[in-house]
Image (cartoon, rainbow over the protein chains, first blue to last red):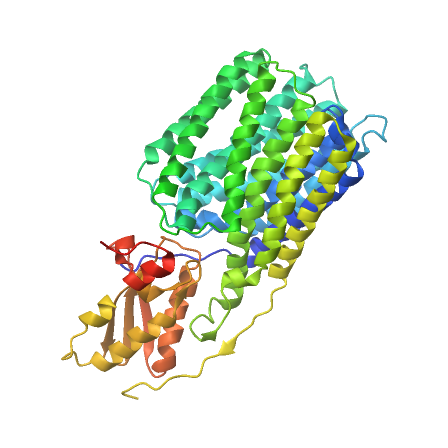
Length: 437
Length: 116
């Protein structure tokens, strides 16, 4: 086993633009929501709300995940990234695509409810970007010598992303040319949303967390069968939901499929609990607190979804469910994990070859820890106040919550900017005397 | 301190190895904030008469994104003390690194309980 190639992290230019763009979209969506808070208190099928949702799930979250994914894929596959060029291409396609798609949704009401052709083009570009991601993941993992369930999760998630973006493109097409697909648009929208949530985000998060959380906590678990069970249950539940939902309708049977997916999530959480129990790095910093919060919110989102499927009366429950899933679960994870990945990527670029030559900062010194603490409190207040505001239908509570969310996005964006603008800070060591010279 | 303690006084490179190994206490794992010696990542060091130094080591995670930086740290730090030498690192995965390889000092720095 000696002399194994440990490989190289991808070039920063293939990764950093994703982080920068994601931060900009996070600020943009928070500010837009602040000035259009009434969107959260109405029905969920609203073109402007769809615009903000897509800015969130594509511009903010998928953008961030693409960046982190390209950096982490070599760690998981123990091989170099297949193509940095493809990664770079996917960035521009995703960026252009979300600007056009988000803009398309936003301006549809102005265009008398007719979805613009350029918005459709945006959907197509996002689909092509997801195809680039699938190719890169597929080819990187193809040359991966060892089988591991984390890799399988990520590859499957990438395929679900492509399926989601293709379905999204067809839905957008259906908005412009409604005679093409003879199905209820709202029913199809539910399938599209859950392909994205459980197919793309959930499985990507499981794959990455099953590798990274043991690394960060210096914990371990031999119970990989739990991850295999999670994989089978989640995908089985998803496929049943989609087949039934497409050919028939989203009915009470969806509850059964949800329970299968929840059983899968339970297996994943049991695996993480085992890692946590066997960890040795005792102190949990604020970045990992975000991960803990995200798991709590995931549980809450699943409870909400169950209540919605059983027909329990919840004021604006669909939007509250969306907030818990997209903001409470996935965004919380992103807000913390950014500072577990980005400073290391930038540090590698500045100090990899200077390490050992003199005094250099540590990766954790590249960002402001106090600002992450501020971001934590702003986010916690924003999230739960927003849920309260939406559920009670209170415009004032919603508005105040969105002020806190804007504060969260600005503190996050500032910290990301500080890391991205970092200048090399190196003090050369004076050499000591050695014998035999 | 295991590697240092294992050094034989009759080793022709005893003094050089001692200096090199002590210098590696300056190389920090940037994620764990603990030096690679106390983490037990260094498995051995050899000097040859043609002025070559070979450090045999491992990483806490295969394909660690900071692996290159740690290797560069080892080479750069040793070169400070041995500028006329050629320093190489060899990454091995056998034996696989485990928490049992962490020294008492390392355990303290990581917040782990002492070994029983």
